[in-house]
Image (cartoon, rainbow, N blue to C red; front, side, top):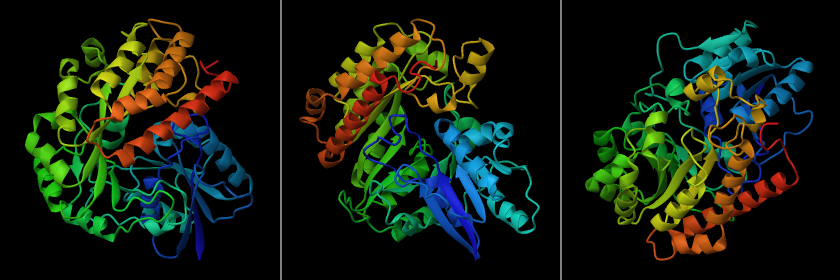
Amino acid sequence: MKHLLLIAPLSKNSLMGGRFFFRMPCLGLLKVAALTPPGWRVTIIDEKVEPLAPGLEADLVGITTMTTTVERGYEIADLYRRHGTKVVMGGMHASCLPDEALQHCDSVVVGEAEQLWPQLLADFDRQALQPVYRHQDGLPSLEGLPLPNWELYREKPYLPVHFVETTRGCPIDCEFCAVTSAFGGRYRNRPQAEVIAELRTLRPFEGVFTLKNCVFFVDDNIISNRAYAREFLERIADFNLHWFGQASMNIARDPDLLELCRKSGCVGLFLGFETLSSEALAAIGKRVNHPNEYLEVVGRIHDHGIGIDGSFVFGLDTDDAGVFERTVEFVRKAKLEVAYFSILTPYPGTRLHQRLVAESRLLSERWSLYDGSHVVYRPKTFTPDALLSGYYQALKETFSLTSVVQRLWGTTAWKSFFYPMNLGFRQSVRGLAHNAAQGLPGACGR
C-alpha cells in the first residue's frame, strides 16, 4: 500500500502559531485525506502539535501552505526531494504564487482540492505528474463531498473541537483579504442533508479539555444565505451542540435569526470589526460595517447570551497614534469576550499586496514575518516601530487579568469557553512579548 504523508508546517512566530495554548485542528488536510482513494495509507503531521520525525518515509508528500508557514514548508519539501520523494504543495500561499512554490516541489494544487486531488494521484500512479493543477471550469460543487475522518486526529493534542464547513466564498472582497480571490465572490452552500449527516458522525474528543459536542463552523459568514441559515439552525436545534462561528454585522439586524442561533447552541460569534473608522472601512472595501452601530450590534448579540470575538486591524492608512487606545477602550466598553488584534499584512493574492508593491512600500518579503504580528510594510502615518509598539501595548492591556475579568464579569456568555480562551491568548501574548524583547525575529521586517 502506498503511503501519503500530509504535513502542516509550523508558524513559530505568530500569535496563533506554535506558542498558542489552544491549538486548532487543520481541517484542510482532513479534506485532502478524505479525497484520497483506497490503496493509500494516509499520515497527517501538524507541526503545531507534533514534530516531523526525522527519516519519516512516504511515497508522496503533500504540504499545505499559509504565507507565514511557507518558508518552513519549503524547507520540508527540499528535504524530501533531496531523497527522491515527490512533493506536492497547496494552500493559500502556493495557490497565489505557484511559480515560487515550484522551485521547491514537483506539483502545485491551485485553489480547492476537490476534483483536482484524485486526478493528481492518478497522474502520480502513471508517473505523469503535472506541474500545476487548477480548475478550468469554475469552482467545484460542494455537493457529495466525502466526510472528513476525525479519527485521524483522535490522539493529537488539539483543542477538542470539530471544524465543519457549510459554505465557501465571500462577496465583500476586503482589500487585505484573499478569501474572495481564493474561494469566489459568491457564497456556495453545501446541501444541508450532507452537513447534518456529517454532524451526526462526530463524537466528542476525550482529554484534559473535553468539550462535548463542540463545533466550529468555519464559514466566513454563517448567515450568508438567510433562508439556508434559518432552516439549518432549526434542524440542529435538538443536537445539543455548543458551536462557534463567524458572521457579518447584519446578524444583529435579525432578532429571529439571533434567537435561532441561541436555541441551536451558539456560544460565540467572530465578528470582523476591523476598525472604528468609517473612512478606513470605505478604503478597505468593507462598507457593510458602520462604527456608529457597533455598540448596538454587540448589545443585541449579548442579549441572546452569545459571546463575541472581535477582530481589529492596526496600521491602516488613516490610522493615527490614538488608534490603539481608542480600540482598547472600545473593547472594554463593549465588554467583548475576546479581541483579536493584528497588524495590517499584505498577503500575496490580495489587492493590498498589489497596491503596496505598486507604491514601493514593502519592507520585506520574508514570508515567515507575514503573520499579523510583524510590520512588513511602510505605514503612512507612523513609523514601523511605533506601529509594532502600539500593537503590543494593545495586546498587553486587553489581556491583562484586570481586563479579562472586567470584560467577562456580568455577561451571560459561556464562561467555561471564554475564560480559558482569554488565558490562552494571554499566554501567547506573553510569548510574543518575550520574542520581541529578545529581538526575535526581525520585528519590523528588517
